[in-house]
Length: 503
Ligand SMILES: Nc1ncnc2c1ncn2[C@@H]1O[C@H](COP(=O)(O)OP(=O)(O)OP(=O)(O)O)[C@@H](O)[C@H]1O
Ligand SMILES: [Mg+2]
Image (cartoon, rainbow, N blue to C red; front, side, top):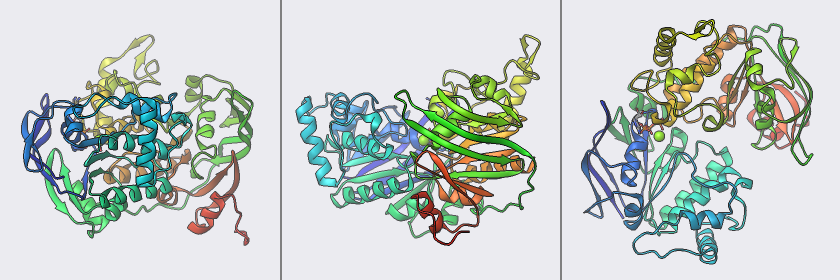
């Protein structure tokens, strides 16, 4: 089935998010859409899926104009979508989520639980999904949750599937599996509109690429284009995809963790025997297969975990047991893994979100009074520096694009005078130009004498930034190695195997 967009325009107030967009997706092709954060990709897809209505323009399915006013129209027309942020209910089973997500759509009856189970089994078998219909969603790895979202779209026999940044939260292995799923779908004749910021994925999976910039289609490309070509077409200037940094100048110990242990409510170990130091002027990256305790370690440093023993010293002062706010004020910048949960308040403005931790401290406040003029001029500076695409400091964070939300967190946390920076997946969802900027910024933090602890599932990012690499495996750090380690030896360590020849 082909889908064609003609002259789609969508404005939000003065902002033209989509400006006269033409796009044609052929039957059985994987069509990638590339564009900077805020370029208008999600807006366009939400229009195709009926979540937003365009100010003007037309959608044609198999050459015939269709009217899509809500998602059930899109589903009835054979268009399914998996969103940038998951929409599953964590405490329900896979089958329950599928039943709940099965809206009343023309041509499809309502599902009961047994039908859902057999549909899940049918689709799983057809595309090699390996999804247990009775598993509780929150117990599943994100990669499988992603498949549940895909199944939910396919259950309506979607012939066109929209995937909005499906790989942003996946591990490299889960990503490879999803790309394989996409290729299987394509073989079956399904068309896929694929949004991602990762150029490698575009090169690997796409048949054609459309590039949009500031709401306009600026060009098309083939997957044979180099990453540099794609990046510069997207950003409108050359982008340096390699990172250069000076040798680290190591100072005193600013973060010292010893014998850290974290248990869950049932008494099971989440972390055990974690001991390591991070010095002023160095970046220590934590590498490991997701789920080996990285999330808990980052959260424990902020006192977000409940049952913690051991010591966490910030410049010599033990902070275990303090409040989160107090931990931040002891000199930590924190970029959380999940910005939706602990990074931002959507119903607050950009300016307000930029001072969430510091609204009662100078210069934002004098004595008990907040200083609105300082807050607003500081916000404008941050917006410019971090290139937050918005309509100004008073815009609500909820209306920003995914990547621009992440930039608000970064702008807040990387603009405070701190001793230790704890950054989890700092560039998740960012476009290549913004990644370049954030990497430079993190190295600047290091060179300004901060201790940086970086958590990243992207090995490219680990190698670009780290001075030393701490490898986590089954709740503890099994080794700390120089960043000169080879990829294959690091891979072995991540699997819990120490290379025979010690470094
Ligand atoms: N509901 C809304 N109200 C106001 N502005 C909006 C709304 N939704 C999106 N925008 C604006 O429209 C522009 C395009 O946003 P969109 O989410 O489509 O970007 P995107 O290309 O998906 O970016 P990203 O890569 O960061 O996800 C942004 O400037 C965003 O702030
Ligand atoms: Mg988006």
